[in-house]
Image (cartoon, rainbow, N blue to C red; front, side, top):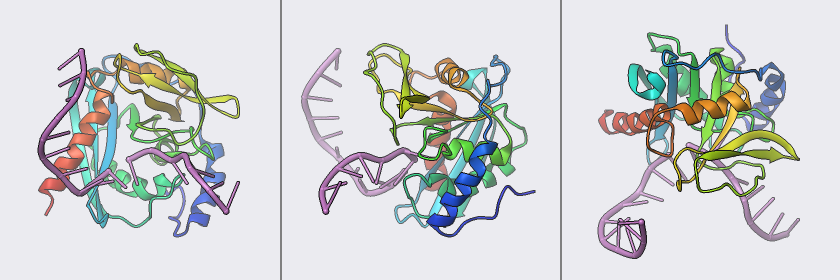
Length: 223
DNA sequence: GCGACAG
DNA sequence: ATCTTGTCGC
């Protein structure tokens, strides 16, 4: 039961985004408690970008305990094009999730959710394929405007044409904020609560940071 | 035409 | 994303 065949060209990929965006559901995340299984996922690439290394880390206690991990090494078959990142990363991420022994309650991606030109970023695409609540947590901006964010912990809306699509969230005072936006089965408020609630005295929420680190370890150990 | 542009 | 060492600052 696949969501769609995989595109080859940028034009096909964009058409798919337009056709899938209406399936994205923006609603509150399920209740977030100490027992919630929060997964973080990320990828690393070879210098020549021939292969990519995907890792998903499932945690509980807001990232303080690792429950399961899974990874996948795949050839890269789609170029990096701003706005089409998911077509480059979702295949490897799905392969990694397929090796998981548990189903996470929510997934956090290193990329945008609906803070995207066609409101269909990586977190939306992955969330739809997995049919699991997903949130985008990117390290930089793809689009949108926002007011200055005070140096202390907090958040401010990220707007596109005046409408809020996500939030800049500063987890640590004085540290650069992350760009948070709903991916699927999530809304702005609960997505921000998730990112601020996660453990980790670093810029990235612990689940995503753990996946990011594991991704480079996998690359270093891969044959 | 000139920038901007998740990873 | 990846290439890369030391170094300025708290």
